Image 1: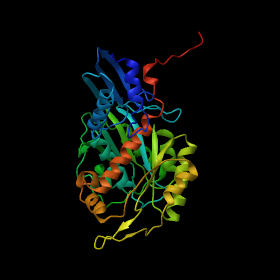
Image 2: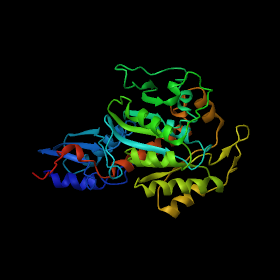
Image 3: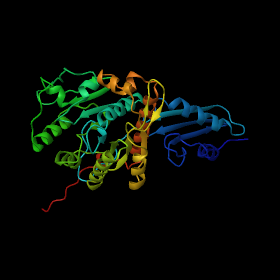
Image 4: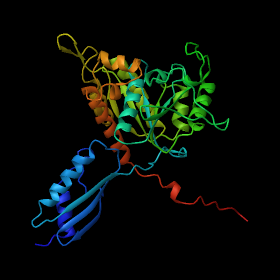
Length: 364
């Protein structure tokens, strides 16, 4: 019995991608299908980083096609192609950066910076080229979390800065430029906004697939200005389960909606406390608040992180959970959140501005 391309399509339609929850035909991931006799070769193009998933996806694709009657040799090339996606209207993309993810919170103290650094590291572990911008001018914490405290970036031309590197990601923070980290930044809003824009645009980001921005907490003038001027692909809102945090998280979500930035999802931090001595589980900050917020605003619940001593300790020592304890349950949750965020971005419309010339019509 001879196999046809239609047979291969039928086999692939029965396979659901574990991350996109779509089959490989309707999602147009299956490409270049070639049938030679009963031998089959094809490509599977993933729009999200999936280094830890590629082998499993390849195995499942080959198995599904080999199950066809009379199937011969099957080869499947599974690869990742990350492209730029649309941002809010009227804002241009940043050179050297394909997609920007804003990690925000309505208030401080909910674990936004910890979430941002672990999200960035998880995306890098999945094979993406990642940058991390610490946009919290008043309280920069990423130098400490990345183990880069006390280090300063170089400038090759006296105008732009080279990002520092740690654990495979590029990083920039106002903290790298301060001689004394204990000196407070006594700046008004416009000065903060200008400093952030310079950090963002004067850093030589090197072909970054995802630039994660650790936003300042709150929804004031600085956050609003950044949301209007920075080309953000999507935002992740971090909250904790208690009512006070959720009230502020809702404000942050609405701010992004007003400036046309899609909400990629909500992360609930400190969701549950597990006693390190007896293993007793307790929802000390409440239960289900983040999921209810997602239902109220029709956004995705990306995941819940436990209140765990090790997460804080590893961040303080410059090895966040994803690299400090890569086999732990929290690291697994961070990677799942990262894959889901990347999939949500891949589902967005692609940015095509670079493919078309800028045509200007003038009266003569």
